[in-house]
Image (cartoon, rainbow, N blue to C red; front, side, top):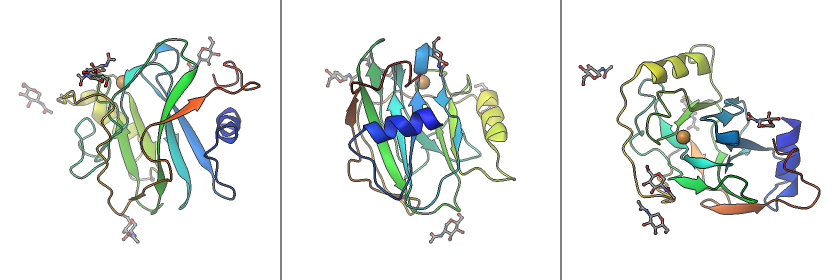
Length: 180
Ligand SMILES: *[C@@H]1O[C@H](CO)[C@@H](O)[C@H](O)[C@H]1NC(C)=O
Ligand SMILES: *[C@@H]1O[C@H](CO)[C@@H](O)[C@H](O)[C@H]1NC(C)=O
Ligand SMILES: *[C@@H]1O[C@H](CO)[C@@H](O)[C@H](O)[C@H]1NC(C)=O
Ligand SMILES: *[C@@H]1O[C@H](CO)[C@@H](O)[C@H](O)[C@H]1NC(C)=O
Ligand SMILES: *[C@@H]1O[C@H](CO)[C@@H](O)[C@H](O)[C@H]1NC(C)=O
Ligand SMILES: [Cu+2]
């Protein structure tokens, strides 16, 4: 986590007093969100940083893990070449920390392979339960146009200043090793 915080500090979008959680998507060719779960507060920002492959961060409900939530948010596809030094980032700000939010990747069978993310999971609704549901589901991972931001804010989200596709250019001093 400290490495991710350092990465956030290195970007221009860091907001003092509130935390930015950077979630790496597709590091090292894996079908993963890393970390797979974050507990955050109102005002904090979740920034999905696409590290490689061709993935999405798409909101679902807890019970239908591999299906896009009606009125949910969706990063759209971000395809990132291996070894890229410019990493696209897609972020939102939390306006209700009591409502757990669930995300998956829409690419192929990635969701069924367990590529899911939980924001503020609860004792009742855990990451493990969500992931198990995802891996057991048929899903219909319908491909959508790449990099299309289909933001439909609901009361769980507020739009961050740079909502949409922003690009984090790896700065000198922030080595690839530090970023994972
Ligand atoms: C925040 O989410 C919780 C859980 O879904 C809900 O009960 C509550 O009404 C929400 N608060 C606001 C201000 O929307
Ligand atoms: C999965 O797909 C099969 C065949 O299409 C269907 O019979 C079954 O009900 C589906 N299961 C779920 C959990 O959707
Ligand atoms: C990323 O994946 C989507 C869905 O499969 C596809 O439509 C798109 O062409 C891919 N982008 C690239 C650059 O391969
Ligand atoms: C993905 O985006 C590129 C660049 O905008 C575009 O040329 C391509 O047609 C898009 N692919 C799909 C499947 O929408
Ligand atoms: C990516 O690979 C590097 C080098 O092998 C390793 O240190 C790092 O933990 C890996 N990251 C992930 C998310 O697997
Ligand atoms: Cu994926």
